[in-house]
Length: 360
Image (cartoon, rainbow, N blue to C red; front, side, top):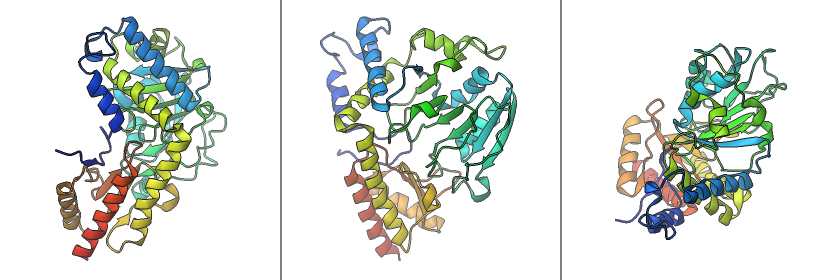
């Protein structure tokens, strides 16, 4: 069978050159006679893999020296608890709620302290990013929290909120490595890797060193303390070793492609092809206010649920898979991450044009 165009929001498409390398090394990693899946995380071979992965990520993102890179398990959702447990010194945090994952993080944090919702776009089904230039930031807030790209709703912060000097914490799961970022603007920038970087089961946390302390909330488990993992170089317990290895391959692929500037150029080009079609289509329409549109996740609808279902079914038969929208919003969603080639987006638009002609 030939490969399909996979528009899944995550676990998602991986670069084909990376998949081919993984296949070649599956039985014997670089002459050591075994797979990375079988390798001890305490071995010199694996230490080299994790060190290179970290260095390549540092190079790609220009991560300052006073930030630690942690490869952790539990996905992004575990960070919803880990962040307040480690950062709530005053017991206060401000959250900007722009989608389901920000909302879940906001709800989880309430178990650990006073949590203020200082802005939200829930009034219009999260179809826009609110103006965050002059928010009512709590004077004693330990941090301000955002989900920078909203996978389900297809919105993205184009400008970071004005936190008025407070630490910014951002979940970047679905826009990780899609464009250059200034890491120094964040206290913590983290993301689950299964959308734009690797297989499911891991989160990468980039955290400023002054936020890594022993002074955490009473009862915080050892495994949920950043210091535990920072002190052990992400090897406190057996990590998701194979996932770290795959992510490392993706980092090298990104470097070979020209880094994050080039990724941003490609991603803008791909997104424009799809958004331009949606803007002129008589059948399909995008659901996000144009100035808040994500480059990674593009939700759209026909306005008729039965027609949406017909489109998803016919698209799948034509080799365009995982286009069904999230159950909370319906419709369709095309996730066009770094590894989705431009040809995939062009082919999808050609199929949509054909569908529109047949169903007008």
